[in-house]
Each structure stands twice: as C-alpha cells, then as structure tokens.
Length: 112
Image (cartoon, rainbow, N blue to C red; front, side, top):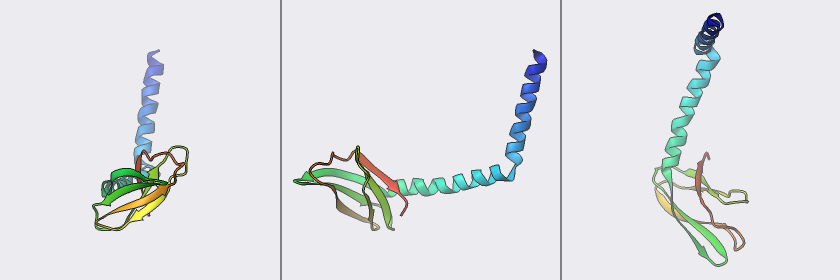
C-alpha cells in the first residue's frame, strides 16, 4: 500500500511540474489574467439605476461612470437579452420590451 501511495504522489508531483513548465499552460494563464481585468472594469462602468413601466413599454435606466462607450444587456427571463450601448459619462433610459415582457432582473456588461 505504501508503494502505491508513493507512486501516486510522485505521479502527481511530476504532472504538476510538467503543467507549470509547459508553454501552453503559461500562455493560457497569461491570456486569462489579461482578459479578467477588462471584464472587471467593464462591470464597474455600467450601473443599474432603475426599472420602470410606462404602459405599454418597459424601460431600464442605467448610468455609465466611465469616459468611454460601454455595452450591456438587460437580463429578462425566458427571452433573448436585448443589448444596448451607452456613451461615456452619461445616464440614459432604454426601452427593452413591450407590455407582454416580464420585468428585467438586472443587467450584464458585455463587450462592444
């Protein structure tokens, strides 16, 4: 039993060292880290102000706190999420659905 545990630990250590030293693992880690701050900064730009209904339309009001254009989508249950873009440093209202649509549950920041 000790031999199997030792062999398993040796195999795990060898696999770990190979994955750390391989160029594809390093490249994948670098691209993931580079893409993550972009998504984080986009998430901080567009912020939900409120949802409201003016019969027969549904509206969402959002504000963009960044100085550049940002894109977002409104999360609506059982429907395709409508996508919008908003210019930098402004607050704007968008019509996202009609009378038969369910109310939005939030917004998602997306790439433009």
